[in-house]
Image 1 (cartoon, one colour):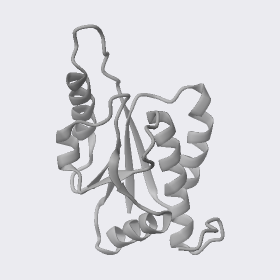
Image 2 (tube, helix red, strand yellow; image 1 turned 180 degrees about the horizontal axis):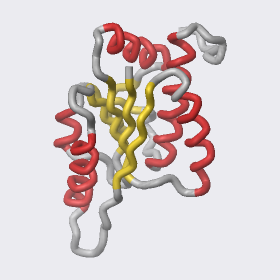
Image 3 (cartoon, helix red, strand yellow; image 1 turned 120 degrees about the vertical axis):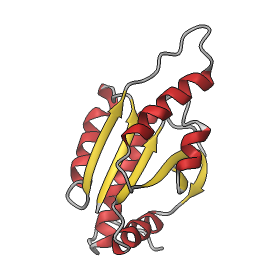
Image 4 (spheres, one colour; image 1 turned 180 degrees about the vertical axis):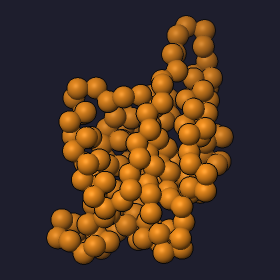
Length: 158
């Protein structure tokens, strides 16, 4: 099964190395595709809703056909690492094409993206910079792979 991560913008120097490392690790367990789309310029007179809509549209246009969409939002449902691993395993067992994770830009995802998503997932009730959300997601995808294979990385009792 393939996982697709669509994110607005490129990571800066602070997070780039850690993101690359965890995406590399996650790629050992899942077919992993990362797509970065251009940030919309928020300047005086441009409503935030317009910026959010433009970025969300760019992400949605790139989602591969047949993929289940999971939107990362602060208001989404909180899953444990084990629940994420179980969900990915179930999608694979159903013969699903893959799962597409959407990470919005500084203003998040618009309502259209959230409506298209099968699940809205919250990584934290904190507001996270999108680069940090990408890092946390990458680590959790790696962790999910180790859980599915029964490897010792994941130490939490669920």
